[in-house]
Image (cartoon, rainbow, N blue to C red; front, side):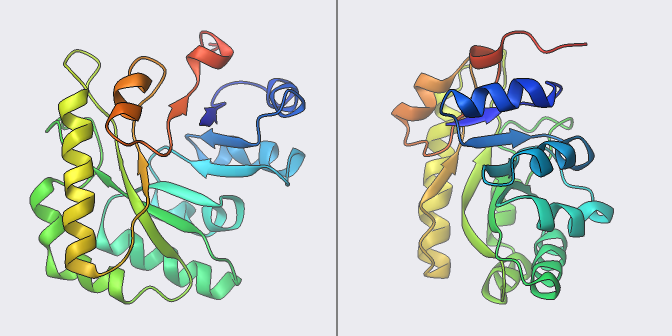
Length: 196
């Protein structure tokens, strides 16, 4: 479980940590930095979109980045990780719902030669799996099943083990787990309605 603390103050994150949670997710790099500084021993995940101008700060702050959505971003993260002596774990984000408002690679982009080359060229960062966000207004389980299939296909193509599947949130966590989720992003069920 990744406890998603976006928009919640540091005091809430500290209380969650005291209660036993150690893995936290944030959507924005800038908002996360003071929280990461306050709890440096926690495992920090970036679950929101990563802008290319924030890559270095993200690599310094996060242990796992869920939202890698292009070969160019994959290369940029790896270069920053190499320069900074960091070893972040990465997930490729898939857009399996076709929504323009969501980031991610379309299913056919997982065959892209440039993407596969970028994965093979990783020096400091490591690709460990895939991530998806399902629609809130449609059945989620088929989306999660498709992500698992895509992961299996990518493992075959690259020869790399990809153990992580980041899928599911508070509203669809059970379906995600049923389809093999290893990372479920939970915010509302833990912390209630977001402030603001």
